Image 1: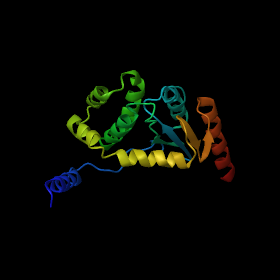
Image 2: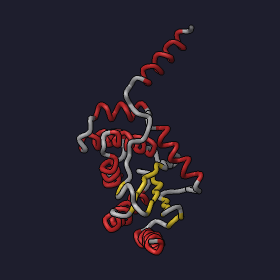
Image 3: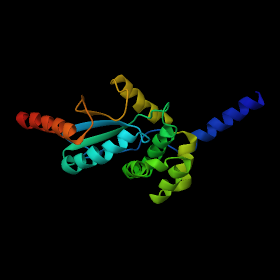
Image 4: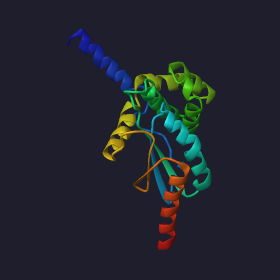
Length: 193
């Protein structure tokens, strides 16, 4: 066995024993059993996503959080956003410590500062175990999760961010359009009761 091959096997064995989950730990926002499901495909470095988060997502969840299940799907636009993949992977690492949505809020609030140092600063601000967070992020353990979300989006016809689906129907971003789509689903649900 060559020295290079033996080194590779050793690294692979160590990565398997790292204790870092390759699965996503993120929970939906709102009601996990909500009547309405919203999928949000987003990029943490995308200015339009930041605007949609502040102007549509937060007010929407304040109004409908008891009946809506919001699922955040990673859709990093790597060709135009240098830190999008690192931010997406980092948010998944924050989820392992129960702070996914707090990380998302902080990332959008301080999007202009996004960079490698900022990711670690945000982990510290959220009182995460920073060495564990950094190990998770730098090992790329969550890359598969991020890419699976991205592929799901591509299969649904997502080609930009933010993109929203309300119970499977693509809806333009914005509080009014998303709210109208939620109301439509709620009305259908009430008619069936």
